Image (cartoon, rainbow, N blue to C red; front, side, top):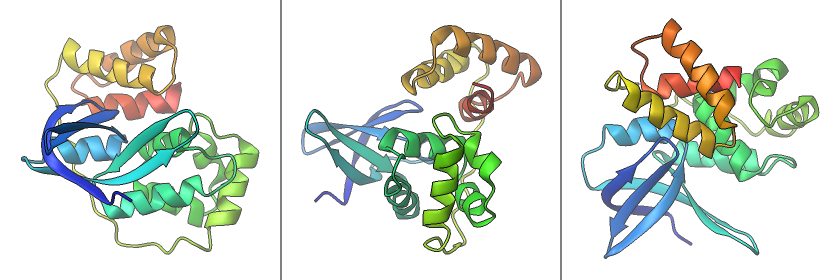
Amino acid sequence: MIDYIKGELTELTPTEAVIETGGIGYSILISLQSFSSLQQVQNPAILYIHHYIREDEELYYGFATKDERALFRLLISVSGIGAGTARMMLSSMTSDEVRDAIIASDVNKIKSIKGIGLKTAQRLILELKDKIVKGSGESISVITSKPGSEVIEEAATALVMLGFAKASVSKVLSAITKEHPGASIEELIKYALKRL
């Protein structure tokens, strides 16, 4: 089993990182939290891996911290929460916000995430509330990116890759950039996830 991959970060988008080590480039799916952390990292970069294997696909999910990976694994242990939904949760909220919502039995906050309905939110709280012991958590500082179309384009690409329709993404991002003109990629995506 692969615990982590350490090497040169050759590509980074809000949903994917490519780390080259030993002459091999590993394509690793990441959350918005890990994207924020990786922007600050000097090479070599390190990602803690969750190796996801199904009959028809094999994927690597990467996390900037072991804490985030542990929470991801807890989330996917719940029936009805797949790897994609768990990554969406960790992109919409920080690890601490997810934990706080579960501990506080905040069904509405959990339900606000795309792909999670009322029953799934209730099941998530029921199954994980006792398992989650609130830790101190690592704070992730948000880096403000260069303002302009490049930031909007990258945010749009990430949202489309997360499964949203291009037309909806364009409309929502257009509204968000008017309200928050200097928003970073992470902020644009977080605002958009709440509206889509």
